[in-house]
Amino acid sequence: MFLGTHQPRLDDKGRLFLPAKYREELAEGLVITKGQERCLYVFPVEEFQRITEALSTAPVTAKAVRDYSRVFFASASDEKPDKQGRVTIPQGLRQYAGLERDCVVIGANTRLEIWDAQAWDTYLSTQEQAFADLSEEVLPGIL
Image 1 (tube, rainbow, N blue to C red):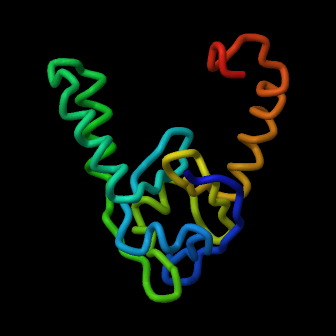
Image 2 (image 1 turned 30 degrees about the horizontal axis):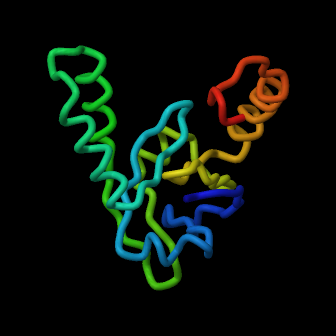
């Protein structure tokens, strides 16, 4: 499970230090791909395989499934962190997410998300109020 908020910086070579508490879990490899709201998703290999299996059972005749799968898999990059815990973010993914220097890495349960720091601040400022005002149960019977 991935939790918390971290604020690493991209270096001049497009590398990012993974949060120290997750380096061991991601040491054998990870997959980075485009996520919603112009962030990047970072999956452990096992979780990415689970998603791949789930999408492979979705009907290929559904246009939304085809569209989503094309972008999701075409932009995916399998990476292995170096000995210092840095991972290279491919240029196309950096462009998609608007990553230049200051980043935010958030834990999102089964994945990490990488955001441009300003984009995260903007997103969070609108979503925190919506979260506080939520009047319906998102998870009925749990919260």
